[in-house]
Length: 281
Image (cartoon, rainbow, N blue to C red; front, side, top):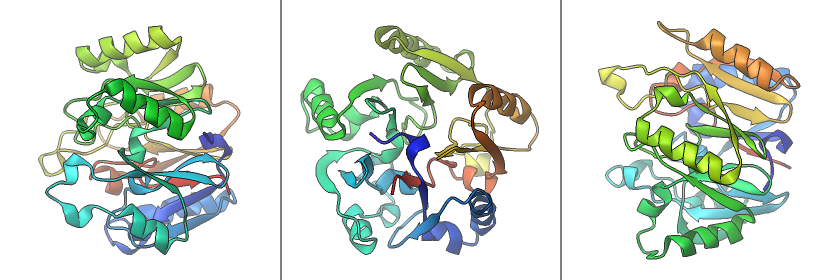
């Protein structure tokens, strides 16, 4: 699979720009991309801003795989469920389609490895054999698939709010000591099985009745494209912005790191990886 650092173009849903709730955040992001000469385009025919989930997955340059996009968390909000076939047609994309139901936000990859959460089994009940389902995804993506526990209280169950690859045998992830015990034990077992080192990243919870499913406090959901990392910061009480930024500077000492307050988006449950589709063109 194409590594995030090898992608060179960013795509955003048109709605991120045209919906007045997000226009300010969109402008801040595109200003950063302009500053670093990274081209970006807007995706037509989308129904929400979380384009990572319904866009194809890039295997190699010019090779795309499109999973079925029918997440259980949208079963009562079908007006927000983008149709990948319509989106691909409207944007002149010709991926290979598969019937497997899998959100793009639940795929975190290195070149020959990918991490997904066990939400994949909940979303594909027609597969009686978990082994067969995993094998089929591995063939489609041409990777070794590593399954980690989902956070049960997370509406989406995605991996991109939990972990990201630094290299083949190192991942960044939310501070395990602040996570649920079942998740900490589960991820530690996976790390041992696959010989992966884990760098704990600070995070905090923002509790707000109006935004109960918010992503505020999750630094892992960053944008990586070319030599640039765009890191969300939150600038609210009890934030860990400084600690997170210093850690990223140490881990990614060879990269350019920009920060952005993306809270207008974060209040609704996603951040930078969720709202961007990056590919190598």
